[in-house]
Amino acid sequence: MIYLELLWSFFQIGLFSIGGGYAAMPLIQNQVVDLHGWLTMTQFADIMTIAEMTPGPIAINSATFVGIQVAGISGAVVATVGCVLPSCVIVITLAYIYYRFRQLTLVQGVLAGMRPAVVAMIASAGIGLLILSFYGQRTLPADLLAVDPVAVVIFAVGFVLLRWKKPNPIWVMAGAGAAGVVLYSLF
Picture: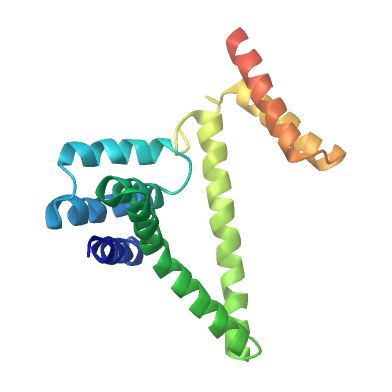
């Protein structure tokens, strides 16, 4: 019975936690602390801390850790499957619908209309990261000349290398990291 409760609880979490792992935290707390009493609030806080520190999505990590606490390894598998299952069902359904109706002009029009929005979202994230690295904050400051010169130089060298020499980007990132360690320790 505990396995069905774990599966159902984490299925609901996986289905309704739109917005990422941090959005899932209140749902997980409600299920495992408030509704079922599987964990105390202290245990929940400890599991959330571990879930944040380990690689991977927070919701899936926390499902695995809660499952282990509640029902051992098999509980971890059941809770993790419950957390992932809604996404899998939704993606498989959307893929089926897409492949079945991809020739329709309506579908092609919707996809064509989404392309500029996707490009804009990616560009917005990139520009936001660039502003954060150049100015140390998420928005442009009043004084645009208050830029971090080391960050600008590292970015410019990396950009030029990537455009003209076309090396493996991993080497450019590693070089930028090494240059950052050296330059920021000097200045």
